[in-house]
Image (cartoon, rainbow, N blue to C red; front, side):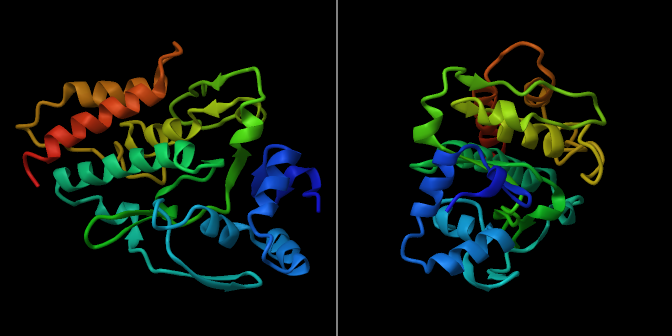
Length: 249
């Protein structure tokens, strides 16, 4: 059951081995039904693969054709634009953690999200983050990725108003920092582009806050021209946010 051109609308698998192993995860399903689901909308299968118990995704209730029924997870990310800064900091930490989880957290696969935007991230009343659109992504099987000799993929930064990436380079590496770069660039940076809130999620820090290192690390996460590990920067940013938030919330 090949996936034509390794592409399912906006969802892509990196190679035939990934496609095979992805389909094998659903051996209990009728093959004709599975083929229909994949070609119409792969998202419910991804929600099964990346279960809500372990990843920042909604609980899948059911699906039929193009209709997918999933748990209501809250309001779009931009709805918290005027929330207290420390509450937004708590959300920022979760966004970075989710970026790591999609990259490292599954035993067999890595999922790189290609449409990270405020409308595709929900925030519940108790500030829990959920990524509500997995249909735009790149899936790679870890067992096939380790055969790639090019090692880690470093995402080259673009200009302030531009965002882009190479699917070929993401797929041609054992691991990519794409998810971390996307969260830093599109959501947290002071240059985060529209439709993100002006100056990013952590805009307007309180006067008493001494967080120069925090903002420097976020911008380094986006714009570094050296091959500094974004995963190390991500861990450092999360630690700084933890140290700040734990004192207030």
